[in-house]
Every structure is written in C-alpha cells, then in structure tokens.
Length: 285
Image 1: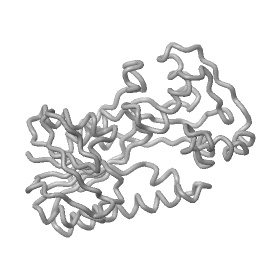
Image 2: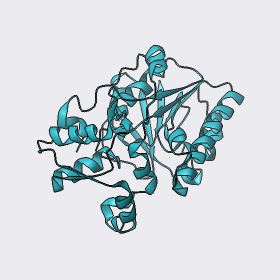
Image 3: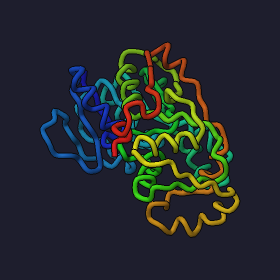
Image 4: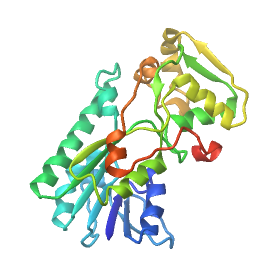
C-alpha cells in the first residue's frame, strides 16, 4: 500500500515510518526539510502551511501527523489524487485548553476544532474513510516540550520546582504507541475519533518523581505556592528553555486531565505502555 506521511519528522513519525516499512508499505514522507538517506522512505519537500502538495503519485492513504489545522490548505488536492483513507492526529487539548487563561492556548483549541471539522467534511463529501486520534501528553523521542523538558531540567539541575502540590492526574502516552495505533487504523476504525491516553494515570508530582528515578537522580522536588510561580512566569520565559511556558500550563497542574482509551482498545487493539516502563530509553533523550 502507498502511504503518505506528513509531519514525518515528528516524534510519532520517527516510530511510524519504520513500522510502515516493516509492514511492507511504500512510504512517502513530506517535510519542509526532506531528509537524505537510503532507509527506504521517499522524502518530498513541501510547506503545507502554504497549501503546497507535492506530486506524490496516487497514494492510497494519508497519515497526517502535522498540525491538523493545516489540512484545510491541501486536503482537497490530496483527495483528488485518489486517497482511499485519511488518518489524522489532533489532541485532547481540544477539551483541556478551551477555558485557558492564555489566549494563545484558546486559539489553538479553535484551530484543532477547525481541522477536525475539515477532516470530517472533506472525507465524507468524497466518500473517503477517516480516522482521528486525540493523544494526551506525548513523549518518547526527546522532541516534546513537556516530559522531555522536565527530564532535561532534572538531568541538568538535579532539582525541579513544582507550583503547588502537583496533584493533577496525567496520562503520558508514548509516541510509539500512537504510531502503532496509526498502523492499526490502516485496517479499521472507520469514521471515528479516538482518545489515545497512556497506560498510567498518575499525579503530576509522581510523574516527575518517576523521571528522577529513571535518570538515576535523587528525588528533589521543591514545592512553591502556585501564585508565587505564576508571578515569576514573565521572567522565567526570558530563558530559552522556558519560552514555551504559559500561565495556562501552570493553571492545569492541579487539574485532572484524564481520557478513556477503551474505544481505541476495542476497535484497534490499542494497548499503551505504562509510563517509562522501559526506563530511560522511553524518554528518547
């Protein structure tokens, strides 16, 4: 089967491309900066944000790992090339950031919603099956700005500042488990949206403690009043490592962000690993 993957250099893409090749599929990866190599993947250059769609022949499947809101710029062109199935990645942020105190995060939820609407409308208009995944907190290739950022702080400084108690529950999901779901969706899950949470549901503080342990560091977490840390955000953001930090992120540390993945388990045999069950290697640093 000919499969086109957008966002192929993402964390999920790094695990998905080898899986597709091992399953015997012909893989075309689309990127703004194509990779060179002879790994069996054909890399094409295109800027999806500009509506570009390269000549990829007549692929049977599109697996869209790039931001889902970019679909509106090229999906109709891709469908006209003969697509028989579309699999796309959105995010549970659609639900968790709707009421964020950060305007940029609220804007992201609107973009996610518009991308999902485009997927459904365009595919149904063209009678093409679609599958939508909404992962929780993604980690696993050292590219994310959450788990990987925490791990780098722990490894470099040996201490972590926790705003408040850090009681909010999290379900970190490994990028390879999402890649496995994409592979399974080649054969099923038609016209459905699935939440993809991880195999562990743990408090934020416990998640950080586990990172300390797999890195072989003594657990040193300093809990500060949330109001104090929030007041420090403008200054903290001046440091390159923390430019992504928002008040919304701090607001959610005490909030449970949990989603049920049983529908994906039943339809696609989705079976995510427990958080860091493979130790340091699961961090992908």
